Length: 574
Image (cartoon, rainbow, N blue to C red):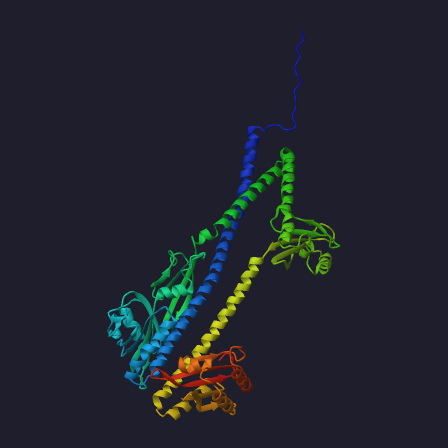
């Protein structure tokens, strides 16, 4: 009997021997390490770049807080200058006593952040408004104050003869605040008084928006000496972006860090980068290992590559941003669903040519001649939405692909920045006008101390306004029964007095401007003579003289307006 045996079967794919599998694992590990080292270096560089970008964004946002803070501090220093001008104008202690409360009440009513308005002859607080709640400060000798910081600020102001902003202090009347002080001196240079305004820190924080809870930043504010005025979390200990805000006698520091810290601000992008880089390194390691073992893994590599290409081909279709492609005649040959949806939302259903650049023919010719695949950038508007386009040649001869991303929010943000810049410029112009007036008031005050004759004093005031403050025409008007009449004047054109007298002669008591000026003792300022609110006669009269801006300021004696100081200029910025 003959024994038969079954034929042996063979397989195209054999299971690798253990030793061979171990060799592949060693090759894979070496390839992975070779690729992982430069990838890790690139990741470190990317991490540093993300942190730098985050700091730049924080710096841009913090700059707006800095600008607003500087503006608020400048306005408060302007109020201190006004208090100083008031003190210089007052002649006697009795006049100062009678008029101080009225003047200080006006300052407090305009700024809810003022805690107290004070005048301290010989550094002893004598005049305080409001008295209620500030009684403890009356009579305090600042040069011998128990608070060392107060003594130092007073002495530094006297030594330097400059305004000093100090604090925050624990106030004698309770609570805390910062104080703006200006020392005053006799003609012989000896110190005789200081004017000061006490401000609440909380109101300044509120007006600058540092306590805004909706912001993505933790912000803080502290003085030069390190006293923290406001802080969200531990900002100064977290490597913040810091700007200096200079104040008389020193500076403050405003700082910010992202909520959660710097690492949290870039964590998501780092994780994405790390995950993506790890996947890429793994894939490349597998591919390289497969190439090194080509005979064994050729079929699997081809299958994997095919799957990868199919996956890549799905990107344009599934991309959330519009993608379109045109042939050499400009006809549409591809669009994804995102392009269709965006057009439907804009009420432009099917109008894919809206994504086609207006200079399509020129671009197509340029691309064909240069044979470049560098992307060109364009911006288009579809309905109320804006899109940024990257335009590249397509595989279709003479055709091009248009990749878009919506930038409507970016456009709105740019417009908001422009508007904010215009508002800040306007605010600085108003501040410049205020500083000009404070300078003029200071010069007028010096003449007031020297000249006691009313006629000569009036002439000196007009001369200061015309010669020193660059106003074109100035006059002092005095009340005569129900009318205002020109008392003295100076400026060009000389014949403007005739027009003014004629205007005043026909000015009735019920005129709103006359009522504000003489009855309510309010300033009447017109920053644009073309303003429709200005009476036609006043507007036309000033237009003939070439004036663009005017101001009228009541002259008050014993609480009643007895006349007015008026000034005109052809410079709208004065």
